[in-house]
Image 1: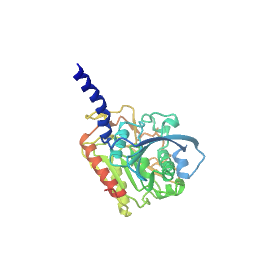
Image 2 (image 1 turned 90 degrees about the horizontal axis):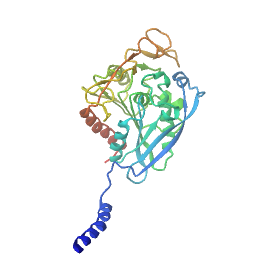
Image 3 (image 1 turned 180 degrees about the horizontal axis):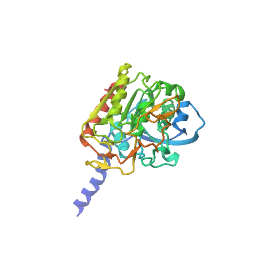
Image 4 (image 1 turned 90 degrees about the vertical axis):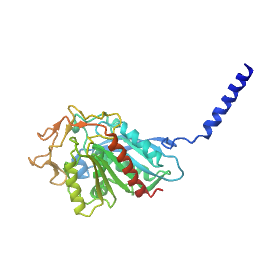
Length: 326
């Protein structure tokens, strides 16, 4: 019994020592901060007109500072119409593991929302673009952030917000940070809306990731926008996955496509800013609303593991080049 007792004591002392010598997983953030973000809840018309008479609101963000020293690069993550889903957590860990900090916006809770899938009129489509600029203002002043290495990455509604945050016109109206994003990385964004001067974008890379069968935000509309951007000499690329439905990087979705019953999609619409500051239905020439006949429902989502793996590799390549990482 004495021998067994001594062995147990030795094991108890050895275990902490062993734990101290193990290298912690790189995906674990060195520090996590929760930030209040002063913003506004604006209609799209107010945003487009530069009208600041919206409702003052405080949204929040989770800032995960990656392991490393000094000022680090950051990727701002913007969720979609369902709020902060599991793909945000998965991307944060993936990016933290490569030494890149992440700042994940919660653009809903402070506005009293949990989801806008069934009623997209609850929040202007450009609200997240404004929130992104407000986050940039916070990060540009943070002592652990390299303000020249902040990228913007969004998903679905957040992808739309990230894509159009690149417009120089919007920067001039709303970005007061003195900084700019180093890259724009939209995932399966809605490209059904065209804005005045929407090919006059920041001189930074725009990298779009989308699925071919996506019937929530069809990739065809993004291809048309990309053609216009390329004709204007912009640095834009599309990576398309043949089996990926909407939200393909959500690890909790089913592999088989599933219908989101009642969810609104503008896949059948053509929306244009015309005249300046007003979004119209390009067919009826009347101001666009989510009661228009072109608004449809019941799109599909799925998790495509192969597309997710490929997208992770591709995004890391973009960030290594943009941030000049080893």
